[in-house]
Length: 221
Image 1 (cartoon, rainbow, N blue to C red):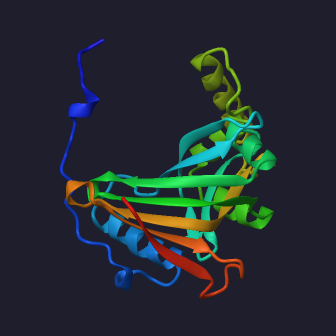
Image 2 (image 1 turned 90 degrees about the horizontal axis):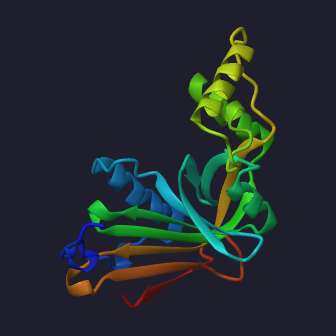
């Protein structure tokens, strides 16, 4: 193993201040502002987010998925319902997500509960995907399960490509769909000099997600 000291990979965090007066009243409005800025800055896949779930055993597990939409209620992403994360979310809907926008010295953490999207929402997004990705969804029915080798995967893809070769609109597999993360807590982190970072956390108050039901606190770095 090469001699590499991660502790030596230190960089100064210089960034604009994050002030309470600059923050939106609703966390998803603030998320929209930052997401728009991340896109404008040319970040590679700013919609990539690390989603953490709780296994039936109680162990945490995280992986990167792509955000496919958001509104005032929360974030949307799609997957195979039979995958490891799908099974975990059906057993325990509590979930968290992190957007690591390192290039901008920013990070957004979201915590909430996952809720399956409707068939209509799933169909609409599935049919907007490239045809190859639609076939891939059929070929990956056993997502997260063991497979013999790459050749077996390629053979399965070829099989479904042949099945749907004469079909103009490929149907959505019943096991494929999306989740909405209903946000309950959102933290915005802005890197600052000398590790004196700015952190603000929105927490859903007891009254629910109506306008004005969010509490906003500054957190110590």
